[in-house]
Image (cartoon, rainbow over all chains, first blue to last red; front, side, top):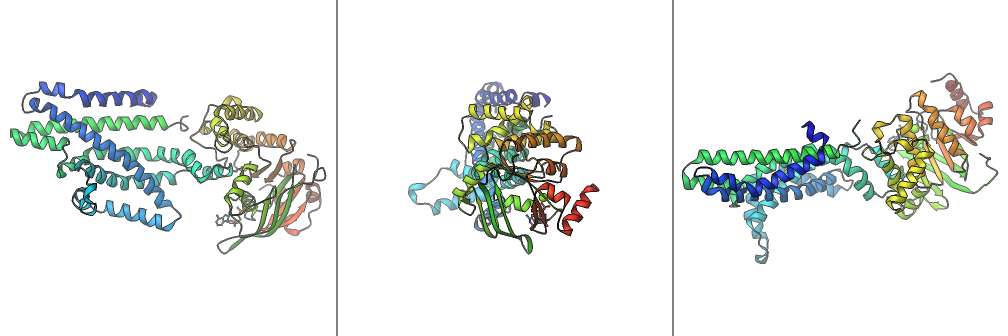
Length: 252
Length: 253
Ligand SMILES: Nc1ncnc2c1ncn2[C@@H]1O[C@H](COP(=O)(O)OP(=O)(O)O)[C@@H](O)[C@H]1O
Ligand SMILES: [Mg+2]
């Protein structure tokens, strides 16, 4: 951990390379494993890549949603505040599985036939909406932590409200919000497993299928668990390094 | 520091400026005209409306009624006017308010880049020159938290100067400083006062007011009670409230 603090750039690079190597190289060592793992190595690798893709897409969209909703909650315009508060209340008060099923089953009936969306997209949308609501709280707390005097100083210098937000408020609030956002992202790696319910072939679904064919649930689920652990560890180190990178100004 | 008579071009004109915070009447029909190059010290008891008045002049607070003109531009809801005025009026705060995530150099260079659309190179060159002027060129790569309070306030002054303002507003610039750091900031302000920039300084530093200011305004209960020269005010205050204030200050509070 000390090493990541001293060389955050290098640590991020290493975690990124490690993750990529793992995603595209894992099938090789897995194929050496005894059956039922060895013969399904390719499937595990594809499922893992699907899980990571789902996490990255919904995680990115979730940060954007979180910033919008977090800002909305602090807005001086009442309707924006109401919409943001309603969104957060709705998502945090209902189960994620229900949200995924809702997007998968209910949304297509609302859309015209020409605009149907894939199972993967349904899962990504539901997960993004979900993590966005949790991110909104972190972003709001982060924005509130930026000293108001700095905002006043920026405005007094002639920066527009938007410039003030981008140059002063956002970077500082992100530094505060980042540990919590990173936590949410690590949970998202795991939460994405619920996409198996709508037949997205991600890691958990692969595990389910392989054990159903082989009747050997224990080695299969242990393998899946180890892969999830590697993924969450990689994401956590990535965000820890990013945090140190952003930690300038607090250095003594 | 040539006095008011040298050039009588008004730069700030406040007419009947009124301001409430809820039911509290913070400014009561304040009238004052400030002239180019003039250094005005604003003193008065805590809570008398000094900060509020200063902050209405660059619209960090909106005034309820009355009018404020800066360099002939009316300060109102028109954002174009506000932009124009904020380019001409710089402000230095009691608590410095440096951007804590930016280096000292970036703190000073940011506004010229964003507002004046200066290139990064030009803005940083200008920032370095200003930092040199306040004696902090060698601190340019540090972050605010690494500097003492006095150094931070000098950076804040350089940051305000980077926009080439015609007017600088100071709201108790030395009140948050340890005593041994007050003088380094006052020295920079004293030097500035001789450059012909218009300065409005809310302060408790009576020595500075007496020595550097051309004009002295005494605020009390949201009004300007006395508006005279420092010499006149200190030797011969007219109102009882001003006399009481001076007695209190002389005994050091
Ligand atoms: N944002 C605000 N909301 C409510 N009351 C305020 C606000 N700002 C200032 N006041 C009140 O207005 C009065 C004048 O404040 P201020 O201008 O800061 O006085 P001074 O700078 O002379 O000490 C004080 O009584 C203060 O409590
Ligand atoms: Mg004040």
